[in-house]
Image (cartoon, rainbow, N blue to C red):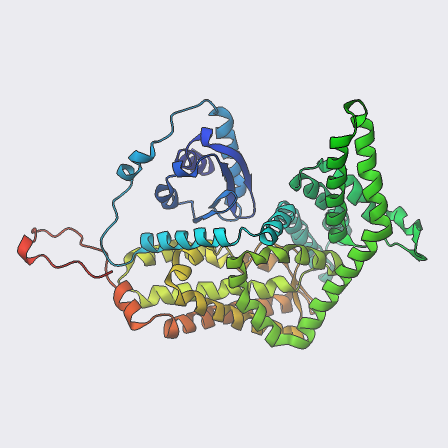
Length: 507
């Protein structure tokens, strides 16, 4: 059997069966499920599946499968749902304890830390349910579906640039440039469609309003004595235009008679927001987008190592607070303006610090075989930029290693920021990948070789700094005493006498 189908078949019963699944989607690394009743999920068994790298509870139930894998498992999962929609008895919660191993009364293990990480994640989810953070999450939902196209076009652009620099296949390079640039030239339309869909409007109407931003004919529009430029305002303008279109469409649906709805509503939904976009939003969004690009350039040109240290060191806490989603439209704006985002390679150093910290935990706890097994299974994904298993399964529940992982990220960010200040700027032509997976998407002012060297040096710095900081400062003596113990008894050959049995260790 195909391994992706086998993974889908293993996951489905553990999330309560087809009757419990209300929606299916995926992003770069996660299978995102809408579930009717989360109490039916057998999470311990789900986490134990070899293909599952972690679980994240949010508005949707998110199963971390890793880049590449999730895109292959999702259609198999959807196919299973289509064939299994007939109602079937759901597993009774009362039987769940009998289907999973009973907890061990030993010192903290990987399962115990995973449970602690889950509790912390649930607490964070409750704290993050504020209007601002929910809005940021919805904005992220607009841009996440665009990431695969950004990655594909970014790699094609890099390949085209490489062929041009090597003076190879001169007839193919223009074709690759066209393929790479076509999506970015129309990205505003896709943002408009996704915005309308996310906020409850008609996607094609949101795309129609946003399309005016990239239409070449806007150069003939004279507003306030100034001519517009095609693309002015970019993705920010498209987002604002489509959001306004949704409001107009909903207003029309409530007030326009049904007999006229099919004619009046689409017309007003395109006309009113379209005029507002041409005579206001494109100017305002263009000014904001320009300010974002200028500030990012200024920050790293003059802030250098200091700016990189702050950005790399604070990214993991931003993720924990849910504020990292605000960076997605900033990255997209920079890619649209400059061809790459200089912020992503620096922020990716947070993952390097996390890997270094996990390696130090592995070395410092030679007797905790359970936790070391978790690290061994999660470390390859961490190297490729999938950090959730290491964050929620290792560093965050332990506490101090999460802080020292941030130290490693700060060191790596400072390294990349310093070279930017010295004239070796490094950027990414797409968002989404991190770690080693970001290498094919790198671009820089000094050429691909220089960009690879600077980014690789930053990763190495993050690994080493995260390892050293965690090894030296990641554990107290009490933590080592509690954590660095072997798992309980591998069943002795001779049963212990009740009166000589050792007392259980203190929690």
